[in-house]
Length: 144
Image (tube, rainbow, N blue to C red):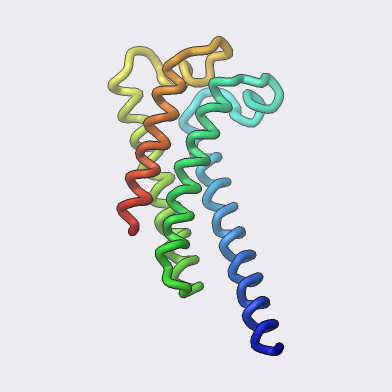
């Protein structure tokens, strides 16, 4: 019974630790995305109900979550390694997703940030979202 409780306590500690690191990575990713797009994403999504901004934020969260999830899954039950990998690869993912957004901005006409936060619906946000999720998937596979 003691072994079961110790194992359960270890699992709960690991889950809470991964949740903390994952939350930090996702929050930093949100702040960085907010910094490279015009306006305040929190206001655009939650007050203005801007669908373009919501799609962009959602894609960024999915991309980063895939990276962090893969880092956890490949840690071989080593909590310290899993936490370090999640943090490092998560931060690397944030930097690369931001850089890819800027690259895509250069390849497309107009200001991509302004287009993706425009209150009018635009198909460009779906392409940008797919680009973000796709790169997140590539980065996740590169970890494993």
